Amino acid sequence: MIIQPKTRGFICTTAHPDGCAAQVQKQIDYVKDKPPVKGPKNVLVIGASTGYGLASRIVSAFGAGANTIGVYFDKPAEGARTASAGWYNSAAFEKAASEAELKSYSIVGDAFSDDIKSRTIELIRSELGKIDLIVYSVASPRRTHPKSGEVFSSVIKPLGETYINKTVNFHTGDVTQATIEPASEDELRQTIAVMGGEDWQMWIDQLEQADVLTDGATTIAYSYIGPEITHAVYRDGTIGAAKNDLEATAHRLADQLGATGGRAFVSVNKALVTQSSAAIPVVPLYISALYKVMKDSGLHENCIEQMYRLFSERLYSEDGTPVDDKGLIRIDDLEMKPEIQAEVAKRWAELTTENVYELTDLKGYNKEFFQLFGFETDGIDYEADIDPNVEMPNLK
Image (tube, rainbow, N blue to C red; front, side, top):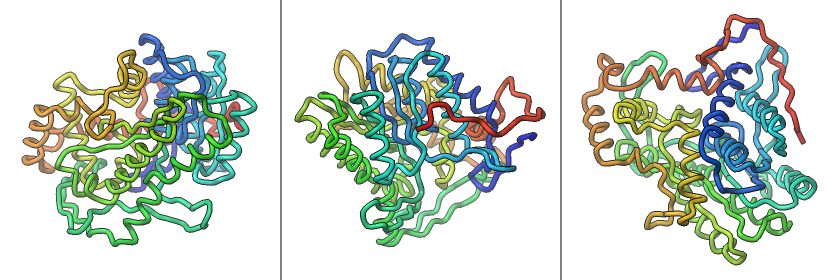
């Protein structure tokens, strides 16, 4: 079939296997061209198929030479429907890892469930013995609690007051006002249940109880803070409350794992084009302005560059892992430079539909959005007839 992008709002409902494979290979090539990372040897990545989770797995494998297990919830092709981008990404990763003679395995299913946790533990026991790094990078709008069976749904809303600010339709370039009503107490509770730290804690508890963690094991999860422009809908909203819970969990896990020399961190990362960030009003416009300013300043980093710097200069630095006064790793340091934020704020005040392509890198944002799904990738013939069915190597 000839696979073309089909969009529904901030989601692309198709994905291109060759384009996804090329994007994965580009990340692998970047890491292989950099100095090796003196890092982990056996790694579990929970939420491993896209974005920061995928990049973490690539840096672990091709930067540190680690064996990896990736847990993710993606679907293969079926009939006229393509597989999800994460499926194609992971298949490409597994193929490249096998060619590099690295152990790698995929477990596909609901990471929130006890069944997937149990299957993962058995795989660790049989193939790796013990793991020394657990990356928690789950991005899901819903969660079924494994004990109570309650289904939680997250929302992206402010707290307390209605939020009004600029936003953009990144497909058309139309700059408009977004009005978002505040979340209810139950919506806040459910968002924390989905995006907070409870499931991360459950993973570490079960891995520890099963004795599949090395002494000195490290675990890390990812967060975002961002500028004042986005705070009401992000850091001071429902997502921010969930991230606060995630960060509190990191402190508990640091004490828990510290008994055997282990560590737990939350890394605050740079704003990037992801499937998740595309769903948040205001954020795509902010990212477009940020990209323009950071690229003009020579400071822009994409996902794999962020993760390589995190692993090599922070998480596994010979000088120890630097953190801020809240115990957070700040790999968003370039984004949050005062001169960068001052210029973004200046442009934000002036942004309209008429000047959005001049003041921001909206074209770059749009291209990166489609590249998440394997489109707009150099060297790919998008008119070619291609089989959407791609086998997943090392699927357990």
